[in-house]
Length: 322
Image (cartoon, rainbow, N blue to C red; front, side, top):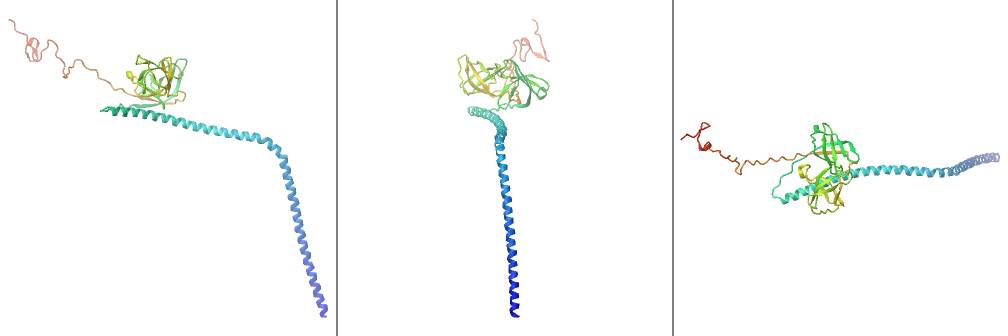
């Protein structure tokens, strides 16, 4: 009986062991099956992707050129606008620096004059009137601008007009709310100027071109001016204030000194009218002597009346007869 029980227990153990092995083999088989299916599926997808890439490669190559050109064009346009903005900023900065340079050179001249003189009297202050250019009149001979400031803004005929760079002209007509500016290039323009550092003083004459010339000089002898020397208003005749920047010497042509103007009329939008009041000079009274008293007329007495007669109660006495 013991042997039968032992055999029976051993048989049950072997059956359990074989059942475990069977389950283990089944699990391994399932894992192998899943692994093979995943590998097959990955291989299919890989081949599909490779096929799509091979088919799309010529199309992508065909469109790559135009797309690249378009991107370069867009980038070039963006760079162009960026350069334009930088150029505009540089022009504004250059105009501001020119204005500061003109003021610095003027102050240097004033300081030199102050050092050369024992006494100094400040020049009269100018009150600029800001105005915008609202029109232009350019034809074969006329060169002028219309600004939106007139007599209501204290603008008067003859006043100088400047922009950020220098003198552009003078007021020739002043209306109630607008004025006409005669430009330096107009054939009727005549402005007294002098060349700084060359001791040359003359009249800047417009010639309807971009570069007016100093045609008439104060000296009868031949004058020389080096290129690059500054040209300023001389203030001769009291027409314009002295020292307004006009331009630089470009060279000589047929005995005339050609000037490159500081002003650029094509870009002038805002101007300033120099409301400069010249000081009035009182006329000298020739009837006043050096002592400050009027001389006595011939035949007139001082305390005595005519002929030495005494004056009584404000009425002259006639001399007695005989």
